[in-house]
Image (tube, rainbow, N blue to C red):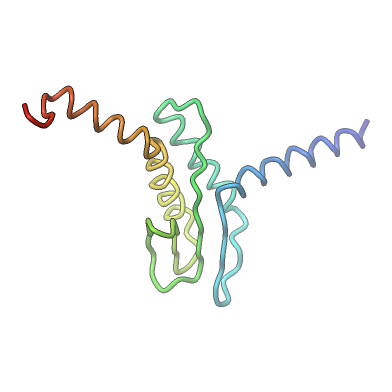
Length: 126
């Protein structure tokens, strides 16, 4: 019984870490240590966005965390959150920004924009 419970706990932990790793890559430079709680904060920030906007599908944006960067910032092109040193609050803010962007994928974003133009009567030739 204890062995089965141990296997179940291991599988759940492995599954949770895989969920985080699908969208999160962590890189460190210099003497910076890998932040132990980054995966948990990543998932927590994503779940907070899902709850806030009542989203029923999982949002897990692809994000690279770089700890030991020259300056703090979130960079759209490479989808990176760069931190000079580990800061869970700045990291969570960056994840929320990228998760918010993923709320409306490109196709849906264009459809909403078309509806806005149509509903406003701004079609060409009007």
